[in-house]
Every structure is written in structure tokens, then in C-alpha cells.
Length: 361
Ligand code: SAH
Ligand code: SF4
Image (cartoon, rainbow, N blue to C red):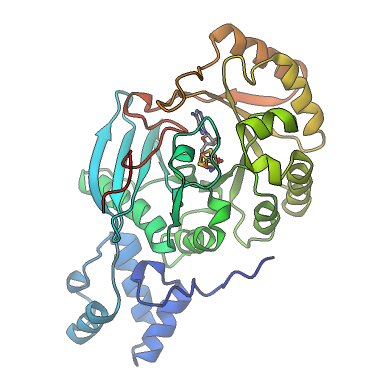
């Protein structure tokens, strides 16, 4: 496994939301405080979603003052919240340096899933993705990643919801495996029983196919779920749609997926957005089956979501989707057609673009 600092992110140590549990314990020990103070603070932050040290009423006044004087709480600031006809909510956040990202909260059968961003923009420039057209600005810190989740959860609870958020998916802006240290760090905090305690099976990373990142993930100590955005089963087409394929071709990606499957025993979900006349020929389903032979993939067919910067790309019409599904059934590949959510507020897959045309400074 690539060297990922297990006890935190080494972010300079003054960002409260980027501190791991072990770092909280260490900080309390340094300050001559008993270890359970770390549990109390994490309980406020991750349990009750209280971010103001002065409201942490079971801490001494001197500790609260010391915390306020030394540990920043760089929560994302909510700039805009939109609600879709189907109940999906999209949030635009501003980070302390003025950069903006979006997150989405989806409801399905009484459960909620937070779709969060891992980078400001994305360097991978997939031709069909709004985020990809922004270019890359910077990675988010673990605290900025967690901050999106915690702020959404707090808003939800403040609005009277009985439960917190049930699932998190790294399917917002950015490529999580190109910011793996921060993403893995934030997952450790989400999962830690003294922090948010979110189960590993409720956490999913989606990657455009960063092969080394997939191999690293196979050794990650928390057995989260993995989705891979395939969108094309041969190098010629995939390189046209997803420039990452030029440096990391399908042979490397598939090799990494075999390693992942062998080491974890997990099935991988394959994401495939059907774009009219581009990648929806049923013949491609046969190519996909051959490519993924032995991996027992679960295929998620995504209706392509139109984006303003690519008006020439359209969603596959229903008969084409059906023909593709028929081919997958004949091939005995398990699949589902993902229901489109939040498209009326540009909150569906691939539509996130922060504060287009650029971040507010
Ligand atoms: N960078 C990661 C995660 C963010 S994108 C990745 O690429 O996997 C989340 C999902 O939305 C990916 O499967 C991506 O391929 C898909 N996507 C991007 N643009 C889309 C669009 N216009 N319509 C449908 N899905 C899209
Ligand atoms: Fe980046 Fe994913 Fe969009 Fe590709 S699909 S540009 S990897 S966010």
C-alpha cells in the first residue's frame, strides 16, 4: 500500500475537522487533559454536529478557550441550496479560500445518501462531464470533505429529521483516487466508532479508473464499496471519452480490478452512462462482457445527463437502452438502470460544476 499516514493527514495540525481520533487523543495528552476529552469533543462534532467550542458544555472553560485559540473549524459555508421536484437537494459550498464545490443529498425509500466532492474541479476532463470542463483547481482537505457531509447532516437534523444520513458516495466533483490521502483520511473519521461511526458498507468511492488507486484501495483497512466509471469497453472509444484512458488503458484498469477482487473478494460496480449513438450499441455490451470476464461485475446503467457545454451529446432513447439491457441479460450480467435524480436542478451525475463559470474569490 502506498504510504498513507494512519494517524491523520499531517495537514499542519490546526484544522479540527482534519484531525483523526488518534490525533485528538495525542493533542489532549499534550495539553495535559485526560484521554476521554477526545471522546467528548468527537461526540460534539460528529454526534451532535456542534462546531462551536463554546457550546461544548461538558468541557472546562479553559479547554474551550484553548481549543478556540488553536484549532480552526473551517466548515464550508452554504451559498445556495436548491430542491428538485423529486426531493433531491443540491448544496453549493464555499471553502475558506473562496473555492466552491457542490454536494447532493438524495432520498430513496426513507434512506438518504450524500454525494460529496473530493476536489475543486477535476483534472481528468471526461468529455461528457460538467465538472471535467472546469479544469482542476485543488484537492479538498479531509476536513473540507467531511465538512460537506456534517453540514448536510446538521441541516437535516435541524429541519426535524429523525435520522442522520445513511450513506455517502464519493460521486460529486473530482476524482477521489487522485486525492486518496484526504479521501481515505475522511473515511477513517466517518467510520471510526468514536467519530461518526458510519458503516463501511455505507461508503462508496467512484473512480474513473485510477489503476494504482484501486490497488491501494484493495489494501485499505476499511472495506468500503467501489464503483468504476467504464463508459466504453475498448481503448479507442474510451480514450475518446475519458482522457485518463490514454495513460491508464483498459488492460491496466482490468488488471487492477482483478487484484482488487482477489484481495477483497468484493464485486465491483461498473458505471456506464448511455450516450446516444456514442457508446450504446448492444455490440459494446458483448465487448464489455469479454473485457470483464471473471470479475462478476454489477453494472449500473446511468441515463446520460445532458450538460450545457456539450449540447451535441444526448441521452440514448428508450429503445436503445432496452436493446443494451437485452444484450446484458443474454450475457447474464447483472445490471440495473439507475433512476435519474435531481436533473431539473443540475444535480444529477456529471452535472455538478460548482459556481460556474468560476469560483468566487
Ligand atoms: N470522478 C469520479 C466520481 C465523480 S463522477 C468518476 O468519474 O467516477 C460520478 C459519476 O457520474 C461517474 O460514474 C461519471 O462517469 C458519471 N458522469 C459524469 N458525467 C455524466 C453525465 N453527463 N451523465 C451521466 N453520468 C455522468
Ligand atoms: Fe472527473 Fe469523474 Fe467528471 Fe471524469 S467523470 S471529469 S473523472 S469528475
